[in-house]
Image 1 (tube, one colour):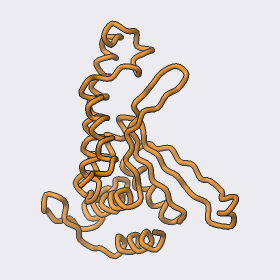
Image 2 (cartoon, rainbow, N blue to C red):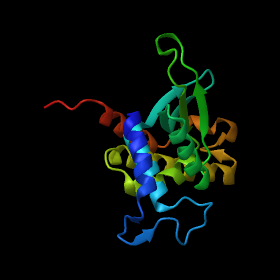
Image 3 (cartoon, one colour):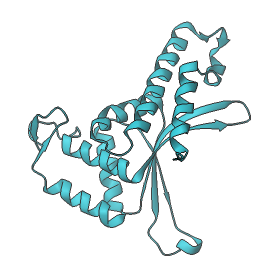
Image 4 (cartoon, one colour):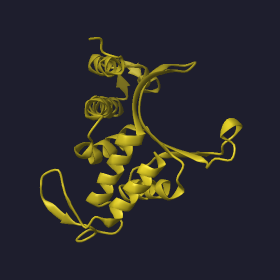
Amino acid sequence: MEFISTALLKLGKMLEHLKSPDGSQMQNNQGLDNQQANLIEIGWLAGMIDGEGSFILRKRQSEKQKQIQAMVCWTNTDKNIVDKFREILNKAGIRYYVMTKRRSGSHLGKKPRTDIQIYRYRELNKLLDLIKPYLASKKEKVEIIHQFVKSRIKQLKLNEMTGKYNGIKMTNRERFYTSEQIELYEKFQSLRKPQRA
């Protein structure tokens, strides 16, 4: 995997032209603010997540409440690739959580592993809007997660305007999911189960 990641990084640097999903052609770094991610960088980011990342929609339970959590996770051990990945997220204005783990036990002596997670609804929405047109292998899962995220954003905006959700105080809003959100969660879970012939 590390060899593939390094090759993708080199390929991204060598490309001079890239067609956007709508077929228009854009030159690398021309006509773009250096502080914003360009099409090559967004395509590279999408490829890294599609190939080495995970799209997650899971139930999470704490002492206080049950939640359905949407998340994009990506892991790598190559510092240059991790730095490039983070640089593109920063340029795109996407906030993320990062954790670098030193190896121990049977992995002692190997390079530290960096995990990047994006799980806030608005950040996920921004990321998925950017990378969805470039994905190849996980489109169906991503579409379900994106619908779930947009539905939650809409619901939480309504909560903020009224101060309540279905008559319940805002402090407990995370416990409540619409029937659409539950259906999306169940549909996502069905994709994870192996299909019988």
